[in-house]
Image 1 (cartoon, protein in one colour):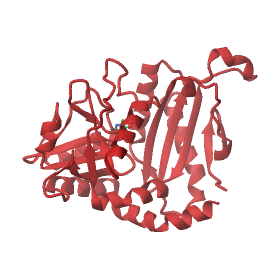
Image 2 (cartoon, protein in one colour):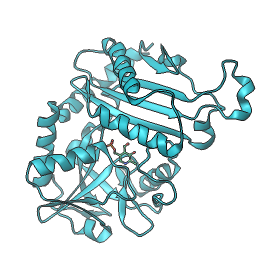
Image 3 (cartoon, helix red, strand yellow):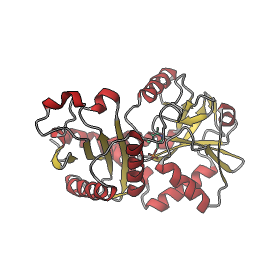
Length: 316
Ligand SMILES: Cc1ncc(COP(=O)(O)O)c(C=O)c1O
């Protein structure tokens, strides 16, 4: 059984004991902000950025979690420290923050200690996520446009990262029906590309890196990192409205997200992008990322893939 511990409402408890109530507003409304951070060489990457985004989400949602950002950072580092010894020293980690308003007032009599926000910080070894993901680095992914649109900022601003994610789930289901390995990019109500259910999208046209302007999207930490690296590498960048047309004519398309950093697309809506291989701008950015974080995370993912069956067997 796992020896991992979770920070949960003021205490460190075994992972299996960290339970959110069925009366929690998270379950009732999807009323929960969250963050996913990863480590490189067991050090959290962009933790301050993730915590700032978490507090931005909480502000929008009018949730007071009872901790300030410095306390949240300190508790995050302590949660990680407590979990590191449970794995080999070459294991990197996912760190997840989940914060809700807590149980609904009407059920307060079920909570003798009173009701308050729900705060949890957990750490999970990246072997499962990245071991499973590894083949995508070689094969690339197929990006499709599902019927499901994104929520525009005037409805619920996607800059807040919340657990209210049914529209992403619908997009994933619709993409799955289009074929294996299909990744959905949701359009906004104007027909422009927004983002995938857990990633931001980039196109490259004539050497210029293009990405949707920050309107109807989550401002991904990996998106920011990619834009900063592109500037450092003298790759011209433009944040703009992009439609299906621009994607179909792109020389390169790729996706960015915390766990895998970046991954190229081989097709868009069934049409091959470029020559179906990784393009020159992507290659430079991939190298730039690996230099910046100090980990060859592609090799790492392949190594996790090999070790995953034994790791999973040992968990039982
Ligand atoms: C909707 C959405 N867009 C983009 C991203 C990528 O953000 P980041 O690079 O911070 O992981 C995520 C991450 O989970 C997401 O949920």
